[in-house]
Amino acid sequence: MRVPSAIQEKRGQQEVKLKRHEEILGKIFPGYDLLGLETKSRPELLDRLGIASLPIHCQPSQGQPPNPIPLPSKDASTHEEDDSAALSENENGDVAPEPQWDESLDQREAVATDDINAIGLATDKQARSYLGISSMSAAFRTIFKLYPPTKEYTAARARACAAAPPPSQLATPFLTRDPALSLLREQRCIDFYFDHFHAVTPLIDEDDFRKQYAMGVRRDSSWLGLLNMVFALGSIASGSDSLHQEYYKAARASFSLDSLGSGNIYSLQALCLLGGFYLHYRNSPNMAYGILGAAHRVAVALGLHREPRPGTGTNEARRAETHRRTWWSLVCLDSWACMTQGRPTLGRWDPATMDTALPAPLHDDDHAAASLRASALLCRVCDRVQDRLARVGPRIAHDEILALDVELLDWHETALPPVLRDDDAASARNHPRLRIAREFICTRYLNARVVLARCALLLTAHDRRRRPIVVEEDRTLARCCAVAADAIDAVALRWTPNRFLVWSAAWYLFQASTVPLLAMAMERSGGGGPSSPAVVTATPPRFVEWRESLAKALGAFAEMRAWMRPSDRSPDIVAAMYEALTADADVVVGRTPSVSDGSGLDLLGWCDEQLAEMDWSEFLGEDSMPPDMMPLA
Image 1 (cartoon, rainbow, N blue to C red):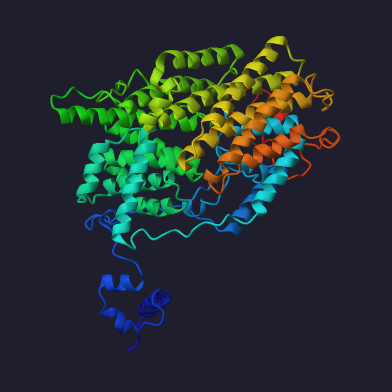
Image 2: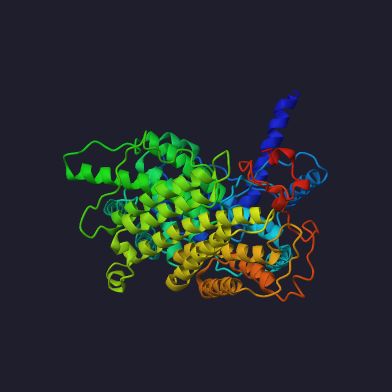
């Protein structure tokens, strides 16, 4: 009897599948007989692999298997082909490629660049995500256009960094080789999390969290996701280079699209930690942006944007306070992340529809409440800054920038408690979390002023390309550089030798360094107009001050290097621009290459679509820019 072709085809597929399974099994258990393995129990098989049984917090509930969100992965050759195709279209005058990005976390540990830090401008020409005037990209492109030698130096440094072998890292440890050791490691991670991250964003009820962990009976995906995110962040603060990757993998097993359909406070807090901290640490800012957007929707769906009704019991009051702190922590995390993106706030805080009260202390020494309350008030001002910079219409005026800066100064004088403003060594020793909170608030306050100052410099640079600088603009330049100098001094004097704290301090030091770099580029480009020679006949005193400020920043970077991530390249980029802008005139100023001399940087193709009345073509190269990227005024 003849077997139908469909059945034969099915049998063939099954045989191929069975062969693949046997090959995989042979790789896992080389040299073992299949019949011998069949009689072994699961613990015995794991024992042969040298892996102990997974602890309870690494295993989702059996009745609810997780459905992880698949992360995109690209083959390197495919990525290069896509880039070259996009470039050829742009050079031929066709429509520019659609903005896109690939921030898969599978190989992000050794990746130094992302959209927000703009380091990729040195080697990557592909259009990526939308960024506005407050972004690092806008500052770098302006520097490159004002003084093209910085482009060559930066490109050479970026190529050297890319060609260097990746720094050696310890192999990622197994989490569960020794249950007793694993328990001690987890407790250490919890302590480091609450001593560092919790001091800044106290969204978790610490007593409840430690109680749930000690009981060890919860196995739902929401709790496991939060627990492993705490482990991951705590391991970073503890100084580990790679342990966080394994904890993140365990947390990712609990995240899925289905988890958004079963919202609760634990899953929301896990999303806040993932999008607010961890993804930024792994150089995935756009993924973090999307995660925090989803977290904001979950928070609104849970009703956290409305003040809870007053309760009668202690537990109800504590639960209501946890909801307030979770809401305001989410608002702050989103505001801090978006400060350097130039994107609209999308109604992050709307007093007409949201009335959640600010955090209140639960006891006399509850400094976390005071810290979060001050941060929330600061973020309200930052929201107004972000909203104005992202607005469609006339460009922001210098008077508006000064008014917003005055609001920030008023916040520092009136809304910041003395315990968070005064540099009291005694209180820092007695309350180490208070010291961490003070440093974070200080750097974020100064960074908000730096962003405004940088935008003011961009406007001044645009105006002085058309006409000589006026006295008021010269004063603006001095004020902006003074703000940046204060920010550099604050980081250089107060940074703490801790991986988490240095990661934050180095980022804000990077931000502040762009202001004197931009000022120096303006000085060396000449102030008379586009045809002015790029020669400095004498070194003005203010140029010396900017150089000294940058030297201080580079010194701080050098001191912090031991605690920075191996992939951090911001010190190299600042150093390259500094060398270009301070090099001998015969070497640097004597040769001024064109903007499109093929040195590896692409200044053409990105701009802020919303700055309709600003002729950014003078900086970004209108000749190679798609028409729809430069709307008419």
